[in-house]
Length: 469
Image (tube, rainbow, N blue to C red; front, side, top):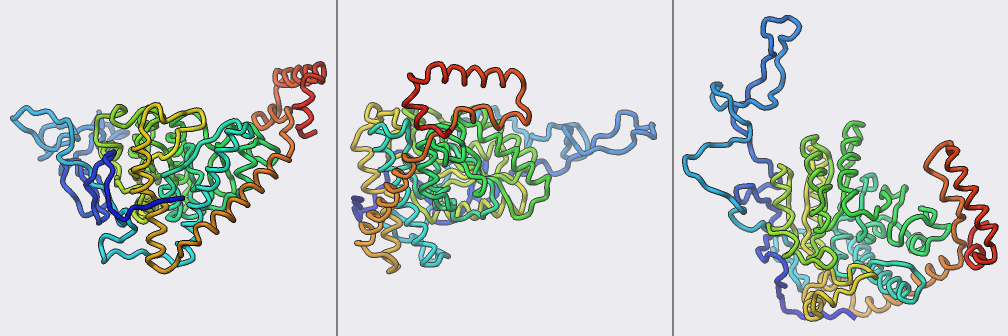
């Protein structure tokens, strides 16, 4: 049962300088009234002349690649803004990156002039999706503990980052997830049965039982299948966005979700650099939940979060309160407009908190106290904040939470039980979907597997009995 103290308290894990306007911070530390963060180069840049000015075959001037001048005179590096006779080192921005916020911990809109452009139907759908994710997590987590699933990862505390961002996207937008974005799929129409089939690994799963649980994917929902290695989706997303740009697909962008831990991978930097230099319509959405498995952010990086890294790559960047669904939604909508209209990359950092263990293979009590988790659950809970806002609009009553959760629980249990009755995929599927025409070596391996199963049929009887014939 969610509890919410009606006293606004800010937890200490993240910067506390919130902003009510969607503004961005420049690389100089000065607030700019616009979202874009693209510092200007020197005023005038020359064109490189050809090596042989007298040659008729090479007289065409080329765009400047390196040489740049302020006054048409001496050659100068294009990244030099101005010179100084004073020797100084810079280790951080002038002030912490501002965090955009719309709603406080009690569900109150901070700035009365802020409008929430949403219908009652859409707002209730957003909230019930958050509740559905919460119920799914509680049941499938317990199912794993009972031995019915091999693995699971909960999304407690991060529901607003999923639903708030998903609600700002269009169906044609292409999504690359990490592994804690199940709410994005649910919002886009992924069914409870599809979710349970994938976690069980039966013939109903779109991945044919080849992936770990929670590694969802959906072609019809434009959601690429999740990959276990951390950060690999980042360069993939940059490449997909470049392809969309080359194909001239209108009103479409790529969204790539990742955690603060993935931002420490080399793939993160390569992806942002490619996206920036090639001007790719991609939104990099970072869920900064305070922990990279057991490593807290204080030990993971020294800088001011992930947002400042976007500025260093000359990428439009904004930081928002990840537990404020309306801040996330408005930031994502603005980010999408930039990506689509300008065909340029955007970085959104959502400051949130991982309320559960990293996964069923983790015990977070070994590296953080229960008081810390309880503080976030009771004073900065994204579900409670959204519920309080709905109640203030007269769109939700207190008893609806219980009845909705009870109905969702029945639906999830039914889907799980149905998933467990479906057969497991045939071992022959291991040899499909890689080669159009399987090579001889693969055929030999398949034959060896079939012979081994036949030879040890009694040993494998329990397993083979559950498999599709």
